[in-house]
Image 1 (cartoon, one colour):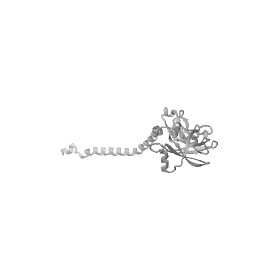
Image 2 (image 1 turned 45 degrees about the vertical axis):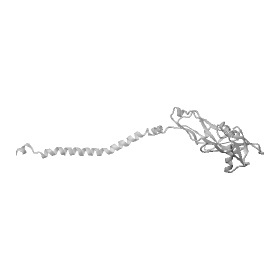
Image 3 (image 1 turned 90 degrees about the vertical axis):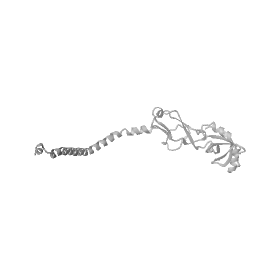
Image 4 (image 1 turned 180 degrees about the horizontal axis):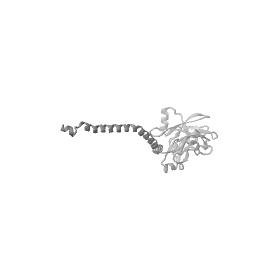
Length: 248
């Protein structure tokens, strides 16, 4: 990662009313800290900071920081954190973390995808971006602004894990290497259809057993109905008088 120049001015106002005046004057309150320095309050020009962020692909920036009137005129620092207004998105405060050129640092880096996955284009799958940021460790000069992953070769059901991310030499990805970062999932409807493919055979077997159990009851009902019909048919024959009896 190449260091980008940025100018800063020491800040004396630290209370809320003071930081409001700093913002009103066109500056953004800032602070710089590190392992080998005392925390120092600063302020940077809002337009200069916004212009810097506008020309970078992410907010992970290595800075060649110049502090006005400081005994150490130039400092190597990472733009550690940016606080923004929840509604307007205006920058409220920034944190700088001073680093050494020969010491490795740890930071989160965004993961971006390029291309259209084959499993989405022709396989009907859905691309799921599981991890949007991953933690890496490297020397400041080796830190990537982002990790770009080409997903065009991914088929439905395939996954890119944390340990498979394409990172520059000297960069270590921290975390469980088998953790999924990007995956092409199969649509739920298709998964349910595949799971239900074997269901009809099992349901048919159950139905056949059920029919066998119900067969005796059906035969008994039919037999009772037949006997009833026979009795009904025999009743008139016994109840009606014959021609001989009528003449008597």
